[in-house]
Image (cartoon, rainbow, N blue to C red):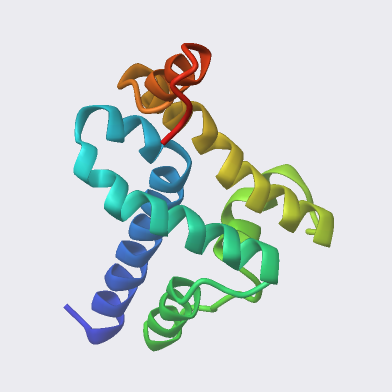
Length: 138
């Protein structure tokens, strides 16, 4: 096996990890229903993903993938992972509004599972019941 082939495999592994991170960002809140400790990993990932989209930064995995692609003798790409792989399927150019939308999507997609989680385990329900009973919220 040549070094170029191995670098290409590593680049593909980075793509897989990046895609897994995107899926985890969007759907990881549902995993928290089963494994509560995942919230300690998931919440920072969602905040990081949203921050990247709101500020226009590029995720560090994108230049890492491009580095390995170039070492493999392949062409890298400009822009972000989302632009290159996901939005390229939907549109030809990414606007600032689309960038903000993807950041909001990352946050909004997690309001559902965390909202249900809070009500399901009484984190909100008990406080609401106490406020209705006149005990107040402590």
